[in-house]
Each structure stands twice: as C-alpha cells, then as structure tokens.
Image (tube, rainbow, N blue to C red; front, top):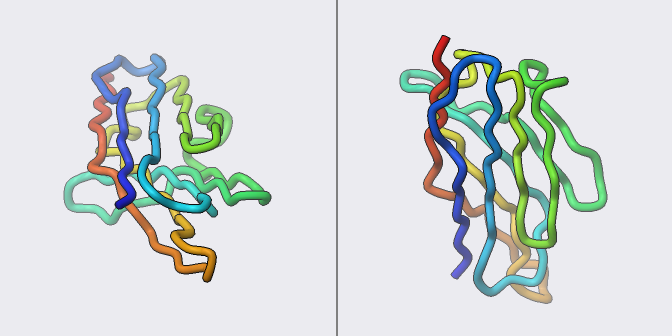
Length: 119
C-alpha cells in the first residue's frame, strides 16, 4: 500500500510564507510524477504544481514567482512565499506511482493540509 503524508499547513498573514511537505511511503518501484493541488469549498480542485520525473516543472500562473518546489527521492516540498488570501484552501499532494516491473501504476492522494491566509 502506498501512502502520502502532507504536513506544514497553517495560518499566516498575507505576505507570509509556508512550507508544505509531502512524503510518499509504501511499496512501489518509482514515482513518475508528483503534484500539489488545492481546493476551495464550492470550487474544483486546481493544479498548483506538477513535477514529472525526468521532465519539467509546471506551475499554475497564479503562483509563478511566489511558489517553488524541492524534490527528494520520495518527497516533495512546496515553498510558498508572498502568500495571498486567494491561496487559502486545502492543499493535496498526489503521486503517480509505478507499482510493479510490468509497469502497473496508480495515482495516490494525500488527505490534504489546510492553508489559511488572512488579509
């Protein structure tokens, strides 16, 4: 079983910073991609950043210049700077994982961590 554990959410004033962590554990061969999404009540979950193994990093336009990521083998850290009230939401980590030598893969999600940015 593969599990994702997020941490680092909290409350911060506009202009502040937070660092979110996502650690993938369990039995798998490799991680092909890791993403951060965020969701606000009443709205669809939106992609914040996508990191494809051996490929490029894609950031949502709304966070470019403010958010960045650091990847470790089984983890991804989201550095959020100059936070705005519009960044408020539940942040979810997702990982596309290869489970077997045959290439069997699956998408796993964390439970989310709340970020609240006050004006």
